[in-house]
Length: 427
Ligand SMILES: *Cc1c(COP(=O)(O)O)cnc(C)c1O
Figure 1 (tube, helix red, strand yellow):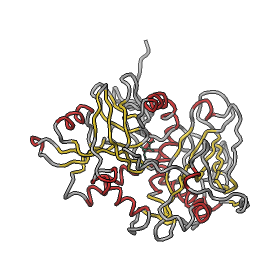
Figure 2 (tube, protein in one colour):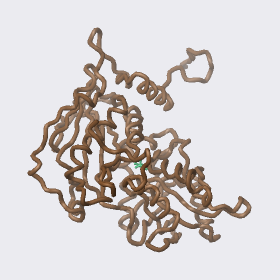
Figure 3 (cartoon, protein in one colour):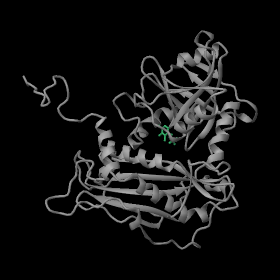
Figure 4 (tube, helix red, strand yellow):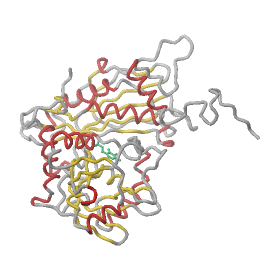
């Protein structure tokens, strides 16, 4: 029999900090001194300390601007390949030297060995944000600091190297400042590009271990508008024998490993005419997320519960769902500006509560919210043979959904000057 003596003397407590909350210590460490040895890699012996990620070291090799023309919005997303802009940013890391100088260079393929960590052990994480061409002509990002911080959290969750998030934010902004003027033409206000920062483990060695080499890269591309589906977004609840994320898992991190396994159910739902899965959790059937977006419901509470009109979304505290920038912004704006009309509620709620609200005539609206879908009205939820029809108002959107979308869009496109709308620059 193995006897276990906790070194800290408290029986039952873990003697090594292997918990998911250990992440918070590492993130705090990054903020304090930016050490990129955050995943346990340290410079050997007397070698100099590994270099920090430093956006000011960026080297620039420009593509021929005449080589490619900017497609119009309609054709840009019609093929099977995402069309990226002229340039991308890459930055290599290895455990002993740290971060190399970032490079801005012509968009093109990456080179990887077949034994690269990412191809076998899913050491990959990503971000998604947009660059917006404002109605005032400016190019803006929406709260990019939150994406950079979330990316740090995701990388540390899968033992990729840490970095100062401010530096990633600067790199993102630089790519937009370089490619935005051409690829988001000034005569197309109200349009956007999709930005995809990602990091992969590139060490060419098989064996389940934290990679000692990694690559950060950032692309900018076209993406179709998905916020106003004709007839609204139709959701199918997840199959009883499948979960997207679980307590103790990694659903809160934007790691590639969360998405591949969800495609089986998503494809099946699509074949039946639904747009996305509404992911439920546990025997209670808690509503969590809609596809890779957060999910919001507007309903009127029962009279016994105060009878208020509520905007409800799943909470972050059990770390099941992704802490969406769109979700967080809606929650904050609703509290700040819509408190007279709606009570903002973050709590666990079940699919049965949604069905009850529908049956009792209390269900008002629902929408999916995320960078890709922006704020997309949901018109139907199908659950175990039953259809819940959700009202869409005039113009295919409920009035509260439209109002929230308007508030967010005004900040993104510069109709309202707001600290969340950050003008892109090369500083
Ligand atoms: C990216 C993502 C979201 C939305 O996050 P935003 O920051 O608003 O784009 C929501 N859920 C999942 C699972 C996601 O991957």
